[in-house]
Every structure is written in structure tokens, then in C-alpha cells.
Amino acid sequence: MEFDYIIAGGGTAGCVLANRLSANPKVSVLLLEAGKSDNYHWVHVPIGYLYCIGNPRTDWMMKTAPEPGLNGRTLSYPRGKLLGGCSSVNGMIYMRGQAADYDGWRQMGNAGWGWDDVLPYFLKSEDHHDPDQPHHRAGGEWKVARQRLRWEVLETVQQGAKEFGIEPTADFNGGTNEGSGFFEVNQKNGVRWNTTKAFLRPAMKRKNLKVMTGAYSRRIMIEGKRAVGVEFERDTQVSQAKARAEVILAAGAINSPKLLELSGIGQADRLANLGVPVHHELKGVGENLQDHLQIRTVYKVSGTKTLNETVNSLWGKIRIGLEYATTQSGPLSMAPSQFGMFTKSDPSLETPDLEYHVQPLSTDKLGDPLHPFPAITVSVCNLRPESVGHTHINDRDVTLQPDIRLNYLSTERDRMVAVQSIKQARQLMTAKALRRYAPEEMLPGTHIASDEDLLREAGNIATTIFHPVGTCKMGSDDKAVVDAQLKVHGIEGLRVVDASIMPKIVSGNTASPVIMIAEKASEMILSDAR
Image (tube, rainbow, N blue to C red; front, side, top):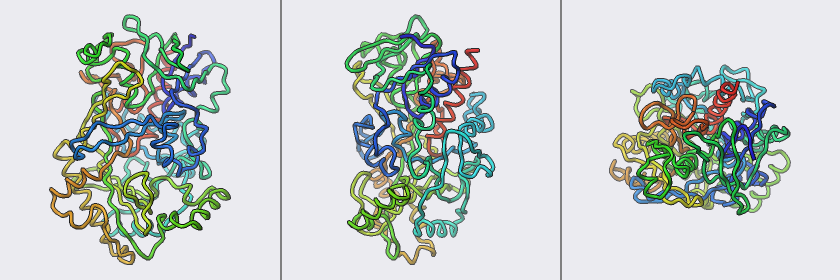
């Protein structure tokens, strides 16, 4: 088999790339995806993410190494294993991050990646429900909708936040996301809108695009200092596909560096010790791993409706099902988080460094049954953590997950922000507007009072918000893996296009920034081919 372009990974970025590259009828494109189709009912029902995470049908089922900052806990680390990747199993929140994030990338030497440079690529694919707003447009592939239900308790939290200077905002995506509001979501008529529906399915009608599911990429084929194809396994049969122009890795922040290392690109000593032939040394492969750590605080409330009591009654379950079946609205159309706030852990900061996700529900941990009493969850994460981890293969066996070490809470500032964020959440819940609900802190609990105890408890209750980035970072320093054109340093015909190229994590959710990256990369790839 021979194609002009081979894309390894049919996830959030891969679907965009497949569409944009195959739009040129003069080139041929192969998309390889290890997982199955997204033709699975829980993918499309928004609340179905609960049944996709931790499900081998849709999840790579990865786990982190024990985290010292989390008191030795190991976390499940969901990654989408199906067409659409994480866009098929994520929280559907539409978020670009802050203008300062991208201006920071540019200041690090990545020309063409400032806010003014990337905004057109956000707009290119956007189909916004209100295109009359500044910085938005309609007509693109990526649908942005209002959520289809509201909760009185969340509207009251917004009123309470205003008492502490967190003002309501209609748009989190204008360059600064400061304020409070209801998240916009990637849905169409109450159904998940992933990159498979948005980009891939329309492109699959083209004769010059071939999509192969169940195709597990084993290594990049390299001759000299050039990538010439991909070796993959499908139905126990190992095959090779040649690339006349380029191989493009779009396997995500964990699997893209894994593929590079299995192909002999990475830290020479590490690879040699594993018996992997070294084709090219790049010290930054698998390094610079960053993620958002979320601390969940839970408050029991009274005198208001939450999802807890609805789900825990038979009639409530019936009503929820009927509501979704007839109108595609109600709790089954819910994103994991409905209401958000962006604020500062320290007033001296120029831009918000905390993101709150407030939910009208509570549970001991994700995936557990909801509590039988009314309660809300007030989760908060540090948007710009200093803690940096890494991910590396431990074995030449391509079926084994790599070692994943986030090093959460490993810097003094991150520990300080964790403590301050719990204190701030507590303060918000003392708002006059919320008094009628008599909020009672359940997690971490009012008995946890000192900074030392709060930090220890943060380690007990914090979890990932599923935003790994940075492991094939863009730049020109000795730890950079790709340049500003996303070409792998030292290897011709090879690019990386996914969240792994971010030199610094963005101040918000990561799905739509990855789509932007793929849009920009597609244009660069096609331009080089002219």
C-alpha cells in the first residue's frame, strides 16, 4: 500500500487532518485508527461519557504510576480508543483558552502561534449558535451549542459568585475567560458532536481517503533520516503502508511519544537499554507532560433540586429517559459540567488561573452511584500548573501502555494554589444568595482546616481532568520535538499534530485547541506540497 499521507491516529486531530488533506483530490490519504468506529450508542448520548470512560470498547484503559503528590495514588487515565478519539468520550465543553496562552507560545520562539495567528483557525471550523457575537462565526463543521437544561441551584451559585467579584460573562472564548457562566458544548440537538461526525464522515465519501479501524500502529518506518511509512497490525496481521509525502502522528499526548520511541526516536540511552534501535536522538520525546488536576469539593444542600434525588428514584429515571427520547433534552443531554467560573488564586495575577466546574450532583468518585440526597460538586483546577511529568515506554512490546508520571503537586506554587483553591471554594459557598440552601461541606469536610491538612486532603481527593499535553513540544530548544511547522526535528517527512505539541498547557479545556492545531497544520502541510 502506498499513499501520499499517512495519519496515525483517528482521534480529535486525525479526523480534521483526514478531511482537510483529502479535500485535495490530487493526493491520497490513509487514516489508521487502533480502535473501532464511533457507532456505539453511549458515544452519542451526552451523559454516556460515564459509560465510555473505563470501557475497553472506547477507552485505552491506561493508568498513571503512583503519584507522590497524590499520596501514592494511581489514577485511571482515560484516552479515547475509537474514531473521534477523546472528542467521542470527553465533556464536550467548547473552550479555547486565553489569548495570553498563545502569545506565550509565540514568545517562546514559535512564530505564527500567537493569539491573532491562531484565532482564524478556531473560526475556520466553528459553527456557533450565536455568530453575531464578536470572535464567533457560523457555517463551519464544529458545532457549538447552548446546553439544553438549566438548574436553579447553579443560577444561584452564579449570583453568589458575583458577591465575591466574579461577574457573569456571556462568552468564555473572546481571549479572556474571566467570569462565570454556563458552558457552551459541542452538541447538535442534544446529541454529542465529535470530530468523526464533523470532519471524518463527510470526507469518507471521497475516493482518495481510506480509513482503517482496528489498525494498531506499531512503528514509523524510517530510512536514513526520513519517515517513509507506518507498520501496523490489524486482525493479527502485520502490514506496512508507505508514505510518498509525509507521515503524520496524531495519536495524542501519550501515544504519539510512545510511537516515536518504538520507532527509535527519543532518548538514546533509554531506547538502547530497551533494545530499541536508535534512529535519531531527541531528548524531549515524552518529556514536558502537563495536565490539569481537579480538586472536588462537595456540598450537601436542601430546598432545591439536584440530579441526585432524580436519578435515585424509579419515576425520576423514567422521566429522564422519556424527556431525552422525546426532546433530546433533560439530564441525559448534560455535559459533565454545566456551570463554570474562571477566577484568580491571587488578585495580583493578570489572568485567571483557576477554573471551576460546578455540577448539580455528587458522588464519592467518578463512576460511583450518585448520593441519595441533594448535593452539588464544586470542582476547581489550577489552569497553569508548574508541575511537569513524563511518559516513556518500559518495553518494546507495542501492546503495553507506557509509564505515565504527571508529578502532580510537585512544586511549591502548585501546592499553594491547591490549598488556596479549596479555601476559595469554601468562601464562595458562604455567599448570601446560597444561604437558603444551607450548604453543608462534605468533602473535604470542615474538620480539615490547617494548610497542611488541606494539602494532604487535596492529595487524597484530586484527580485528573483528562487534559494531557506537551510530550512532543513545539520549539527550538534541546527539549523540543517539533518546530513551528510541527515537523519533527532531524527527521524528514514526519510531523506531530495533536495536544502533545503544546509547549505549555492552555488555560482551559483542550479539545477545541487541538482542532485549531489540526486546522493550522493541514494548511501548512498542503502549502508545503504545492
